Length: 285
Image (cartoon, helix red, strand yellow):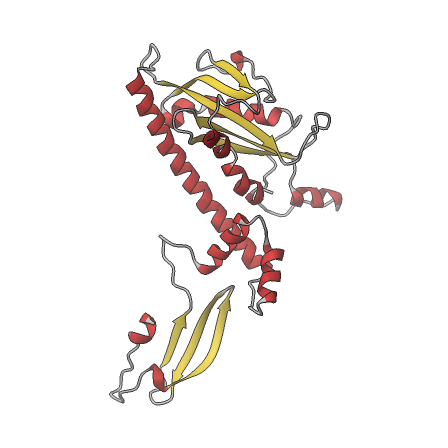
């Protein structure tokens, strides 16, 4: 409506968009640009069906975000659009906006982790939990998961992830994903060709059981650099693989394990541990 109200035609004919005829529609995914041409002064007016800025998502990115939050993908979106007789974006356009949304999620998570680290550090100082060298120390909860169940006898998952959550705040301090598989590289190898230039997500070699430990170890080693704190007390599920203390060079860390039904870890922390996985398992597949 603002675009229509602000439309002005020069020339002194007193014409407006009301005197224009529809010419064509330019579609870019779910966003359309409507082109009108004035019958009196021949001025072309364009009206966009979507207006977004740095503080909001475009309609294309927003619908992809909705599909991801719903646990679906392009196929689900295409079926819904067909059911309501609405033109849908193409698969390449969907992938483009999925990657754009993925970057926004990564940026938002990084910002929130930094804020959580600052809050944990402040609470540790207020509680007097400070090492001899003046570095605050905190208690954390760590857990991980794989892309498929192991059923206690089949540890061959191709992807795994883990996160570290502050015990006081229940907020994520660190997360990461490990992948043993890249579809583009695998297809190229089967066809005996050189892989085309792409963003390869294969970043892990070895047993799948080591994925979680490697991620948690990376988080411990990055604690002082990221948050200016040390993790001196770690809570982990009884199913979590043991991590030898000598693998953590920053300090001597105590690791306490709890059963899945234990109340030692608040429910809000248990829920927080799984938040990043929902998005990252999609964007890094």
